[in-house]
Length: 333
Image (cartoon, rainbow, N blue to C red; front, side):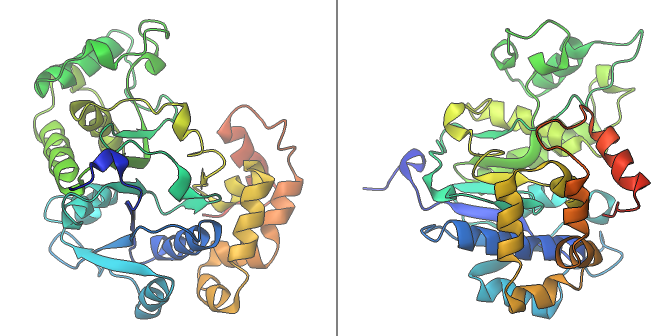
């Protein structure tokens, strides 16, 4: 008897590997997963966009990086990008889903994520998809005399024939951005990557090509993946993550985004894992090719940034942290 998606523990992990920064981040992600969750029994799938008319340059990873990823136990999954490509690289996470094994539960992570605990012990309910709540109210931007949050979001749900009311967090005030279902697309999961990916791609394309009237003055890029994601999650019966997923963006994963910010504000555990998993020579040899990792991790600049801040009393706004690092000449990305 086949197991339901809900009960499977041997899920696949999916990230994007691409020429440049993302390839080095992919190495860091994979080596951290192998080190902190040796009991993980799923597949680590590294989606690699292939050359085509949507790319000005070859988006594939260097051969030696690809070889290292495979040596670490990852599988390289090539995929085509007929819709987005270089014009919207965030679209890789959408189009890449279509190349994954049909019917096998998946968890997607942005490559700028460090695994710091046993991912295999997170009780994912793949029949109820969800995504990261580590986000700010980046979209939509409300104009003084324009439509409000409710009108904008409801127009999207109506466009795709989705029920809107149950998507709202009624504990939040009306017309406050947090009342409306909105995710960071840094991680999300579902029961079947191909079904999820097709719907995600359809919604993203439809929003781009024929946006509802209340969105006329809204900027879609770079937010398109995060605009479509809550609609997809809701359409599959999912929603906000429950407390059982608190390890994500918590004790199990760290979406670090930019290395100077990671050193400034993430946990001692995350920094310890970062520096331990990057220490072996075969890892160091590759990661030192990427200047931010060379400077921050191997030449000690990250620890100098960390010493500038009290991690228990950080500035409230990220921009304040950035500005302080820049003033000291330590900013890089």
